Image 1 (cartoon, rainbow, N blue to C red):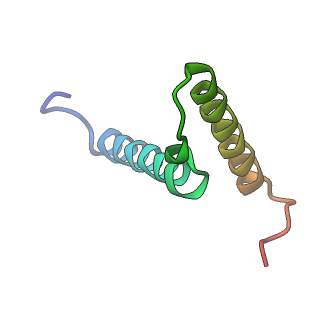
Image 2: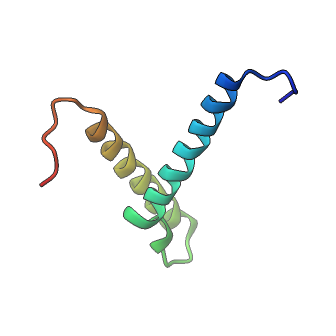
Length: 71
């Protein structure tokens, strides 16, 4: 970024960074991304794939205006 970067762009980039950090924290702590114990690449790959799918599903539910609020 240069000195002439508009404040609106800086705010947008800060929000994007926060979203990325929040999603990673959700993946790691909420969905168990860091819980894999194994030795094989294929097992790790499956674990990461299913964790990311679960996170995508959670995001879709969160963004759906018609979804019921959690109780």
